[in-house]
Image 1 (spheres, rainbow, N blue to C red):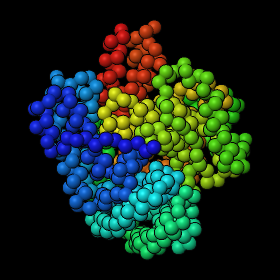
Image 2: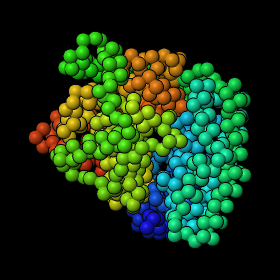
Image 3: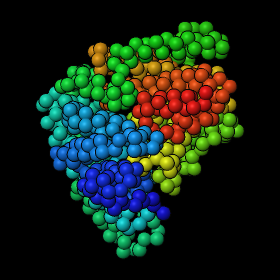
Length: 588
């Protein structure tokens, strides 16, 4: 049964009146619930991913002036309403919710000062055409179990097709004002869009729900649905894809910029500072982050040297990277299923040890799956959260475009990060926490969430992993990968580094394949600042653990520390630090 959230009877426009007529805490709760409900109406796809199916037929045009106006009004209203609730009237949990919501409103409103995401709405990593493709496949969050489900998707497609047209118009307008993607990214988008132009319906991604229609449907329903999907895809969707594909392949590609960093666009420097703040939830400067990255790269390189010596490799570290990249013994698989099986085996190995570090464990099921073919070439390994009610599992997606060249040396660390106890534990526990208001159950701060996942990689030895030096080297490699991000992201976006300089710096300091590194550097080009969040968050959590261990001494309990980090939910780092400091003080 699909999970739905009961609508709050109190209309949001009456909240100030309500605040005066009932107890403050109850009014605050109603305000938070209404904020969440209003947010779902603005972001119906987010509702679908949460397992709330009330808005499965909607896809608002986020590029329209009307949508922009409604979104701005939404955050302005709730930023104002927060002032109605003094901290003295709120519990500790409610005070945290107030602080989180204030951050949400403030950072969202600040973002309206910049036009970058509006004028560059499509890229190869983060765009709606990729998430919609997942929904369209029938294997994602969009349900295709009933006739109503099938009709809902047709209606949602209308909104998406309108968005595609607006995206083309916005890119054309933006390119005249200096807002345009680098040419190297445009080239990567083209095959993704081209896949939507396929005229053979049997091969078209958006036709897959027809190929997998439930047998329980009547013949009449099957015929009507098939005809409706055929008409929609052939007469509306494919032409829309052809139109935007042709535009990006010709006019837009010719206008694509040669620069790699966002600073070459209007307001580029200010926009990057905003993205740093948004993704790290700190006030760190680009220079501070760049220098921190250089320091971390040096530290981790020294640890890598120890592993190189341990395995008896006699060349320098860069030669060792090449050795690891090309070591056939680390590429043992011939069938993609063997990759999936290997991750499941890692899970089995660590299960007996997990009890020593965690007494909070999620109820949401978990699976490892291969990334879908249509996005596999450009995709990174990733985690997709389960539904709020736990009926849809959390899924660890693994891209395996070339199984014979799939290198396993970082698989243990990758599992700890993307799966358990990384994203699956943190996100699922947050969604299952009945003490959190609804809006915080699906909230995401990259510095906290990715910081936790990167911190989780360091728990490998405590969980019975990293017995193989190459797997430990893989962990160092993944940490190095995040340290390098601090250097190359700030390098490209504030110091004039080219794409090629960033690629070479990565090749010089990590063992990832060149193809993987290129994909990563282009990812940072597409979303400035996002890549900084991992290391900043991890270092904060590690520093908080070290502080707790030092100050609590024999009173330090690792399971309780993890409880304190995870039970607060996804929050800006300063709020996490406040929570841990209070816990330390209470347990001294």
